[in-house]
Image (cartoon, rainbow, N blue to C red; front, side):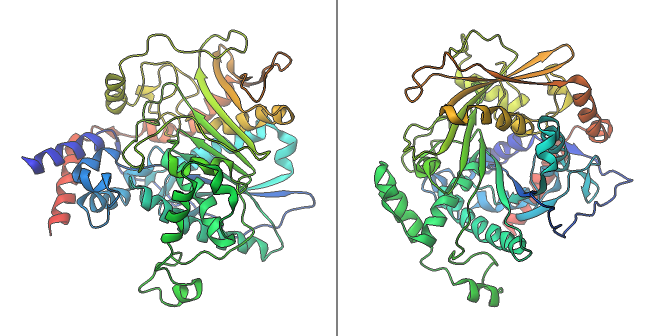
Length: 490
């Protein structure tokens, strides 16, 4: 009976995915590995997508150990490893293999093994949106796109270690640019706990430079400092790790690279937890945005993987050192009344709405769910919004463009409205009054409009996957689960 409950819980999670039959006439896209030297005054940007936790529902396989943050050698981790390697996972979100993987935005959607790969088209959409928002700026820059893949474990300890790998691999990639005389800028888009991995990069940087008085300003600062110091006790140096790859993974070494800084970090639905909340104020990030939605009931629900068993949608404790920090609430298809914060009326009971989102991938609330912030949304879950199947993350170039108009005003809270019109989509960024900004009467909202033709074209890019034969996968998923458990019990 105990094994049966595990089996059904895993099946419930995997049933949230749709499987695509292999596409016969697929081809492999050639990803450019060369780095072109920029022209005069051209900025070079490294853009990185970082996915979130995978298979959260599988935590019940080893609930007590996950609660103790001890996932090593567990059935949960082994099952997750099998899921992580399956190409089905690439269908509807920006995820590829583990580590940094370079991609090229393209109108075509085939990447590996004849399987649709959502990240290619999401990157394509973001690139074209960026060019539409600011054509002159796009001519002055060269954009390189990557994904960063990690294990996806629901574990605070694993997220810190994944951040160490990320820091070391990113440092080595940046060095390749610098060897060509290029100093790239870094922009990261992260979803869910992928955002906490990115925030942990600041703690890894402090391992290199030494911990400073910054941590003393926060309630859990000393505790977080001890966590980072203890994680490198048994790690080899970079030189030894590169020589002895049999016993060491290539990026599992004590960090030593200096000078790394992230120019922009945009977190989508990232749970705000005590272990990473302080890094929103770190000088490691030149600009950081915490984007959330009232329709996202997952972001604030992970009280399991934090040692203090608390989680939130917004940052409660922050030391502002003149940083460009913003919290942005995204809202869809609602009326605006001045600059006052709008609260939704009569939200459904939390447990009912969470169950609905897990089962149907959508919310009965008008605003985006945790999934809709990042995932490609299938046509049968589109809620009659013509900008789908694009996720909300695809519109981050518009958000950052509109936010730049308020940089001198030190506004830290915004409402980001996405309003559907007959001939297109209106994006409106509305400043919200806070204690830091006592009066916003003179600050008018900033707007950007995109025609329907653009979104029709974007939708056509996704037609190969939606027009392909997508089958009901309950039986296929059960077959995979059986195979997973057979492997685990061998």
